[in-house]
Length: 274
Image (cartoon, rainbow, N blue to C red):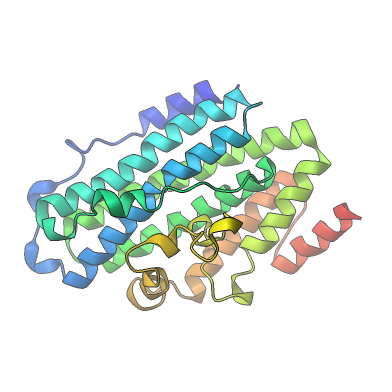
């Protein structure tokens, strides 16, 4: 089982809301209204780990090891929502998300193949790590800069945990896992072909609720993500290439095949699918 060692490693790295956030260093003049509003939107987005967890547990009934790990992932993701809300409660109480705004992002996700979902969320963690690093750079107020740095490090560790389950899946399922990971990898690394931010919270997950079946579509401002990425934290081509490079490097290591470009991975996908 992977869960026992993952639990211990994540617990060693766990930070405290009381001891590791420098609340006393807050500088009100360095927090703009624009910045504070993005904290609210990220808090609500992080809350969507709740329906994602319900999806993982439903779709992995035959995998108690992975399901146990999800308990830790869920705890840490909800902690991200909590620390962002705590920040607003202390310093911008007018922007604390309401219970109704939080509950709006709890909706049922359609069942999906577990291996593809695993790869999708691995890619999501790689991307979110980079998004939050940029957010830490963009913010000027020191306390929220520290919070985004801590959250980014958590997301990187989560990506590493998902990767361990991907390695296990390759051992257990062979070509089926290769096919699923390559397929989703091509999709999630092909950001140049779409204007949509390629993250699980921005993908359609419930046909019966379309078009309000993405997490982002159910936020108070459904358009905020694009503006945050393009005009606020400025997640540009260079930043995106770090995401794509991370996906390709990890799949190269998993498959034992060198992927320098998405086209290389796509050719590999077609080869194993034939």
